Amino acid sequence: AQPSLSTSGVFVPSKDQSLYALTRANGRDRWICRAETPLKTSPVVLGTSLYQYTENHGLLSIDPLNGAKLWALPIRAQPVALTGT
Image (cartoon, rainbow, N blue to C red; front, side, top):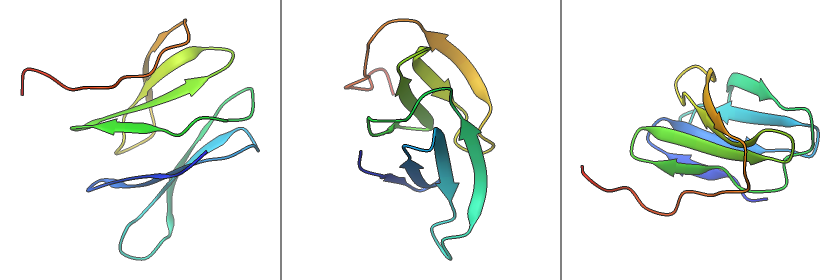
């Protein structure tokens, strides 16, 4: 899976079951969000929201600033558009 880039950082999914958030300016780790399965899809950044699909929890909404899991949609889904902004 490919990394995603936004103003809040670089988000790198890994087969080691982790989503890494890196600081754009220097590439240093900001936070790591652990999953229970390898991450095989790219994270999606829409506006100020970050989403990552995981095989065991479905679509996760993750706070891009601190890596906290906000909610999960337990189906295979991927956001494709942001409306109402």
